[in-house]
Image 1 (cartoon, rainbow, N blue to C red):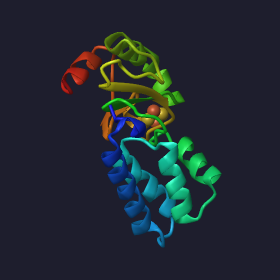
Image 2 (image 1 turned 135 degrees about the vertical axis):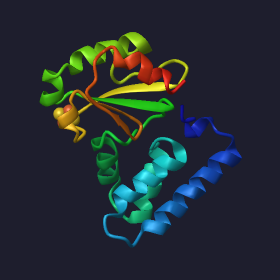
Image 3 (image 1 turned 60 degrees about the vertical axis):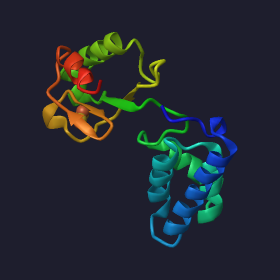
Length: 164
Ligand code: FES
């Protein structure tokens, strides 16, 4: 699980914030910088804490409300520390009719958590999302950047085991 910024040692915290400032500076004059910066900052910190969003807002000269709005709109961004691996289960109609609900039940059984939750060991987070663009292989999930399709509940234990 990403370590919360306020749990880092003062030196490491300062170092991470300097990296955030450098990321902002690298993108400052590019079109569409906000998404690129948020992605990079999340790569540095593992999530997007308020302090980092303020630095992005100042650095890009954008209202904090706009930066916060983008950070909370996209499911790929997290404003709190999440698990080492994030499972995103598509709950849009094509996946739903092909059995996404049963796949979700298998995930809940295996992980012991529900949507929006993290396992106590910090290994997994579970999210429900809209279409992830692979409707042809519904029902589908993503684990980090990897897509898994044509799922049945029986697939889940093996997929999770491959991350252990
Ligand atoms: S509806 Fe699930 S991937 Fe498109």
